[in-house]
Length: 282
Image 1 (tube, rainbow, N blue to C red):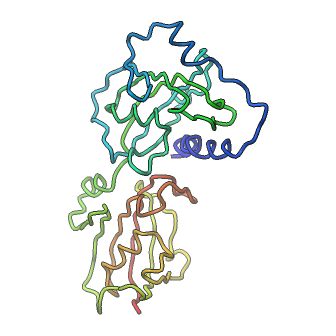
Image 2: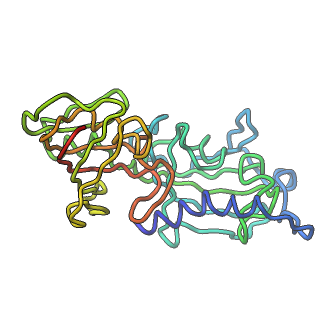
Image 3: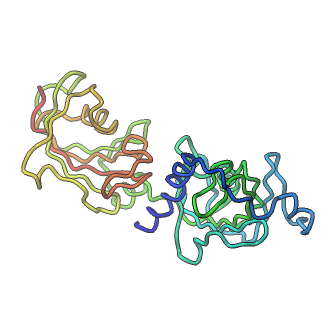
């Protein structure tokens, strides 16, 4: 898991840092796309209408990557004159991105991934505007630098749907947003509504069962008001399915959790599980 944290940080944080720089002594790119095309045979590459050149080096036998997938992948980056800038293959560093509105990879990588299957490996001749553009990556990619990027599609993120199936959680119900939940007991009273306070005991887990938080461990239940957006969306929506006295498990997709944010043990794209008990509804 820590390996993937590092890779995600390179995708996001370094771009932000570099975007804030104002350095008049910016070094020139190491070679250009124009020079590379003039000096090398690129007949095995396919040119897209965006200006990305792609060559398939290995054809995998895995599933096709689709628009809503979160995918782990490997990256190696060279400058156009052949300098090695980054090698995630050597260090077994996996990057991660979704292909939907939560995507964090640069445009060229996203374009290539959308045409790949798991196990595929491609080489991309990437114009700067499809890479890190005017920002670069501090200490790695220079501003406005065209790049040679090798890309290998690794695996899909382990999903809530897979977890529920693998663990035979037959009582799980789901919503159209991908929120899953189980309920134990009859409970009492009405379901919580906007403006009402809900008091719960909970324990939160990552999908690999790593515990990251627990009101039980602290010995104090947690109270929040429905509709005030003081908790993640998965709780705002999920707790409305539970009456006072009921227990269960909430399976929260990352879009309804912390999204791209990392906090403590939680990383970008992490789905979450919460064992909950509703103590009171007022």
